[in-house]
Image (cartoon, rainbow, N blue to C red):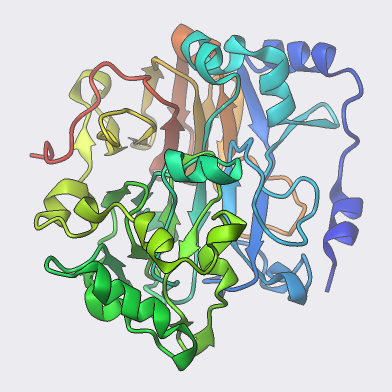
Length: 421
């Protein structure tokens, strides 16, 4: 079994020493697009679902003690918040002419040229990322802190979204259902009892929730502070650029969840203050009597930006607490079809089916990937390239399908949740 260091040593390209010059050349040659290599992330407390198309021998490439790889991150400038992580864990690398450089460094260097003026002026970074999350079974009922609560520990909040791509969901795995929120009528005292019973086995938090069957080709929007226990469909997850969370479930499929995973992103002095912990939940959103109507996403065809044989669909849309924080689309082209795309902002692109060309870049969906190996399925499309427009062509015998996600406040005509007729 190759270790992380060995795998990187065998496949790693040298890091660019003159970033300004290399970035300029890469953007010029790529017409504003950067090619990215796969970014793999392990989780010590989870069980890989093995649909990421990573080679079966490579799921524990970071070492058994680090856990199996069950995530691939896209166009990420966010570091994974894992104990014992390697320095670049979660960060995307750009590849150009035998050299590599971090997308995070490219954004810091290129500024508004890469992410757009509005995002650069407000955030001075690419503030979002997306991932494939792939687990064999369910994960603990948990929430991600709000911006207000995450700030208490020097972090940012984490709203997120889900889409279940059919191309990566050839099987359901063990539990294709997700518990979300709390059953209306649940009280804070009910949740307090669950936390008090943490060390007595299953603390019963899911007895206070409802599960929804997951449907391929649909998704959900999950605001911060809302409990959820993702099920076993592989999930595409556009989200805010943070890795904070709090696990509220003590036992999952017979595996104990340590208390420290409940409080890891809370102030030290509050680690045993149950009222404080419960206070980080958005109570109104958790007990919403119309939870599904408030958070469920069906794809919506963007008729203004689709053509015969080429369909651009909204798959993540809507606002979080009144703000457009991220969004995503699925582009599908019939064999031989082509389309000119012009977006209002930068995006991270991942090809999920077929082969073709995006601008000057050839793209192809991998069948099997070795850890540390380069692929040709992922791109970062800069704000400059998005505004200028680029052509997408299907050069393969079957459909070409790609997902791309966007940053905050990009679209003037983003659909609202419930507008999926």
